[in-house]
Length: 383
Image (cartoon, rainbow, N blue to C red):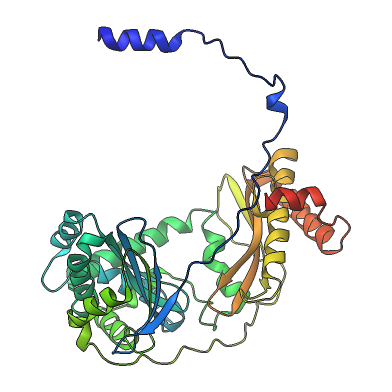
């Protein structure tokens, strides 16, 4: 205790600090000079069962990351069973045929490794991260996760109940509701990206549905394996050749073709949440694809408009008007071919109309070049 008190007393003593520039707080630090960018060398090759590998060797640290990606994703969810792929892929990491959930987690903890399964809009997959010295042990568990997942009824029931409860909570959360309905508004209710996950759709999913989905889409031919870390092509080939994945065969269906979006008619879509203390406003529009040639220019423009704390949108709604704690806007990308423009902000309930007017004005001022992006704004975002 005496030692601690002496330390605290010493820390509390005033320090005589001299700064050569007394006006240092008035100047923003300048960005360092741009460094030359060297794209990491990527080595593509194909394994015997058709998996396409993209390897980036980085030997500075003794770690390896792998991501095995397949076609599929939420666009394959049957109507009335929205949320199916999300449930099925999560079930993969609830254990294997040999190991239950606790044993599975302990096996990963023993080597400080991780294995995760995920589902996107138009893809799904399994990833791992481990120390190089534990790659063999972690990869063995990775292979079992893919080929012999536990798929136990009690784990499935628990995941369904948890997701249903999450949906119920989101119904009464104004900030969560726009994200739930935006797909239907932008793409139309019949579009693969237009569904809404509900208690009913989750309740309609069965364990057999999951087994069928995973067996259909998780096939090696045309799957893509992204590898980064302290490993070579020869080591990857040897690792696969000495694992059960060496005899894994089959091809998944072709990538699903997305229909044209059928945006719902109308300009204002209102969801009533009685007694809500605040509103959540969102402006939506279809946007450019991720492969658009002006992607970088669009990114800079979006950053000026609503991408950062000092963006026009946030400085207006938060700093100037005091309607919101934070407002953001910009482009996001769904699936491989679709982009969206979104503007969102939680605002005071009594300032909902005024906030929407301000958002509308900011968008029109930028679009019409009434208030074009300035040199200072562009340099700020570049920096």
